[in-house]
Image 1: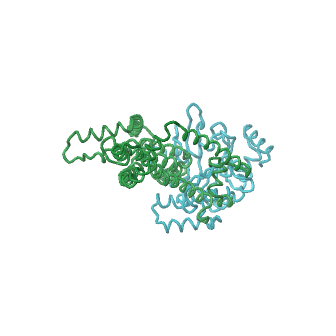
Image 2 (image 1 turned 90 degrees about the vertical axis):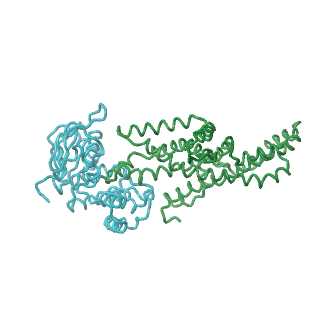
Image 3 (image 1 turned 180 degrees about the vertical axis):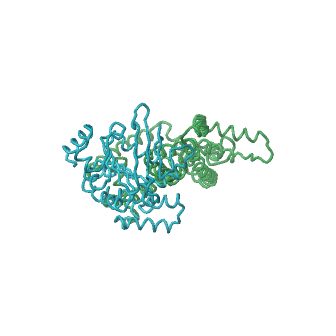
Length: 251
Length: 288
């Protein structure tokens, strides 16, 4: 792989819903094996940015380039693009009518056209790694929130994506279940998975991220290494935001 | 959680308040029994003492006519059963096609949405019996060589056309009830729009609409009697013939009982599907 070429490059990304402008010119470059955390208040555009990166939302202007290939041009096969970018959602979005192994093997079987045996082997290897091997035949509703979210991560990883997007994946979990999910992410980061994550867990962002980006009013106002961003941010808006987080006891 | 899985259907129904006996306490049973006796007693007393009771009994509940019409009507009922069984299979497929057409997004699919919507509007608006008339008398009137002219066939086609409109709406409600995040999850994994529909949205949608869908099928079963108007001798027409010959209405009552009997397996089927789904999703595969 080309070490110089960024895994992901976003230039001048604009997105509005009706009259509401959510993203107003996002520029972001993510290197291979880099872990980038997006922080910012609710409504600052973190989730929308992630959804745009996965082409779940049409963008109004700008470019998104993955491994040197522009994915926002006309005539791009979006299904092909999505195979390379996985996303894990805040609300898990597991398929409730399928068992865990069914969830995990659906896309490998239908999209990558793997045989059932091969897809299940691949799925089981991942489930074992993330401590879910004994849950292979359970339906999602029978799992705890933490197990569901880990299953969702496994489902995304089964497609062997180049980049994994994580959209506040611990926000819907009971506090005691957050750690087990964050451990999984830590492991993925340590392995060199390219990650872009939106999060409110500042402590986690500090531990795992190579770089933190602060989103405010639809732009990346400030970015830098966690040590700098969380202790001595330049921008008054960033300082304000962190002040509120600290007083809420989340850092 | 696991206790939930072992709850019986009656308990679940009672909890939801839809069961006949609701949330009755032991003492409530006596009150219910007493009040039932009083209410039905009064109704029975009024009916039995009505001036025309004996004539009505003679005309509608004649034991001899009752016995004699059972085997003959049962024979004709087979026509209705064949008709609705064939119709139901066709409707399941055709209505699904309509519902999927209607849910296709984007400007490209506008003509398909328009077709599906117009179809549903048209066939829900026109009385079923009229569609049966127009098709069964109109199409054979074209005298196209080789074309089926049998009233049974065109009556069947008419029922499929009309009930597909209703069932398409039931399907559509099911499709729309599946949250868009499910589709987003499917698409994010690289599944195409059609694959997402086929493997993620439709299986959930269909499961949710099985009860209303079977409800529509009960309506369809009863509508097979309408085909008698274009000359098909099915169970209702047969009761007319028997009743006319005997100057007695008892065959109609037998006919009504037959239709009642037909709906009972359908209703049990609804219960079965609902219970099976609850078991599966709550108990996982380990829970029997």
